[in-house]
Image (cartoon, rainbow, N blue to C red):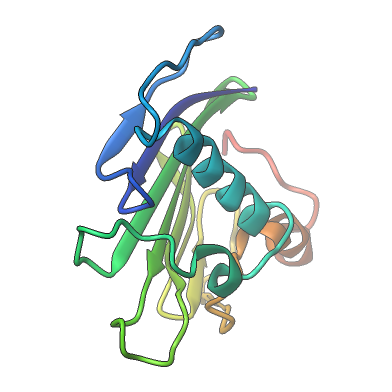
Length: 165
């Protein structure tokens, strides 16, 4: 598997930033130009998605200073399993004066352009090989749905987990 695209918007010094890595890359730039921020963004998404860490703890105070928008976006494309996975994460920040913490507004996963799941508004909609009609509930807006996804597929779809339908 190989990461083929990283998109980061409204994170530290990165705004509307896209990087398409190849097998070998050399990142050069002035101090403060975003080299470390790029890797830090990927690490935070990994901590959220793979380790199940909280969005509130990972993304607090990580927006760009000059951008007043309260939404951060992160996208990863990964080639593998004879296709391309596309993952998108949206982190909603409260207004500066509000006591709330950052939370997950949306989480999306596609395989070769076909949706596997969509999360938003407390509901998870599964697609492709999933036969369950009503959405899952995922009320914890601070944690990603993705870490529990494979367990839930087996729970509601038996042993059918093929990504090619």
